[in-house]
Length: 395
Length: 200
Image (spheres, rainbow over the protein chains, first blue to last red):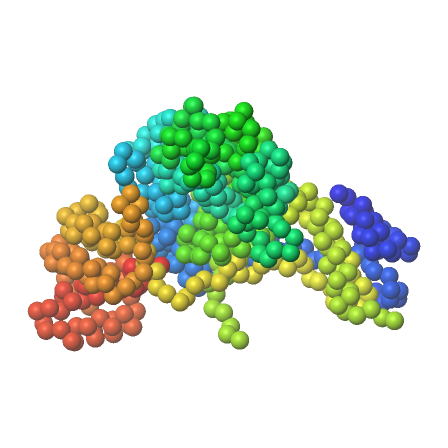
């Protein structure tokens, strides 16, 4: 929108069209004209300080204390003397330089592995199940500086030696960690709810219900009767328990459907139907599969669904829909900060949006789909993140 | 009648919100687009109202928790020991630590063990016991023959900084309490268990 159009819009909305002309756009000055006391004027704000300028205002002591804390978690080691020399010379400008160097070290790859492994609760072995696959993929992507989005879209998995392999679910497609049996079996459950919710919380930093803009709900009539119910007028609370099912499950159902052919062991079963097992526990289908939210057997067996308003053919499409959303990137940044600084999930979910947006915008200006390294450099160089560790005045 | 400052503030806010709304993003962080265009820098103010200097940026992204000590991930602690000793984490010196890694906070979800990075009394005790082979290893004593004179070398490797007079005073306090024969080992255990070494 042009500035004059924006001005016109504002004035129109303010109901003050009459005496204002383009010349009322002024540079910020200490005093505002007072000749016409009731006529708002449009002023241009002082230019916003750039992140570089804000970084330049940091002291060497601030930067050193911050990087001393960050180094073990991000680089897997202590700060080094030569890095302190760089900090003393460059102060805040040293941040991206030093963090960039860290992202080339083995410690950074270890951090990526630990972050994803602990987030998805997947490490070690269980019977024939290799729970290291999610961490292996995260480490591979970090080491090779591949787009971080491949954590949900890679068409391969990575074995314990670091070599590319087919994912172990047996599905005729792959979607990064989503098509590892480690993730699928860890999060198996009735109606595939846990799988859908874990993806949303881990990679979207959100929970159900989303807004209808974020996730358009499925039509009531396509759901099984259990989930068609709505909140009874006058009932307290917002959680369903039989009275408010539709508000959440109209969205849950869309995100659960791409999992319909994965059984509780994480194996892809081509003959899955999504049909509720007769006389069985609600949400269960045959052979360790889960039931679909959809009532029509012709659609309940299909993996196709709609995720964030995008039609997807299967779980691979769902992964792509996730990483195409801004929420995936800001959540990745928040999750990374949460891991590095031991923040509670509730804190991660409420990190300031302007900071996350700054980080993602800066990273995407370098790479359309940034690597974890690029996200880390921008995230941990952000002045508001550094200042989080400044001593606070006690009231 | 002159409008109140609050009213002026509200007008500014509304106008700014409308202008900010021109960037094509709906409120949803899950919106599938990101707009990198700079924000419109204008804002409507009323005569006499305070002039906002610029967009208010968030000053601090979060408030770090200070109510508990959280250990570094096990492998990071091992990396630090490796840097101090100059030996790889696969060295036999670290076998006891590796053997007891699940007791020391490492995770193995396949064995139903989640990471536990609390610095509990039990974990401190386990850590110190598992350090005995490290502190009894002749190679470490060769590297740090006398802790007082080697403290700066140790400090740089372990803590990433030069040693201070306070560090030396703490070391001297430990040395003073131990019989001569135990001093080197007790100092070793104390230094390798320091919070600055093991905690986030």
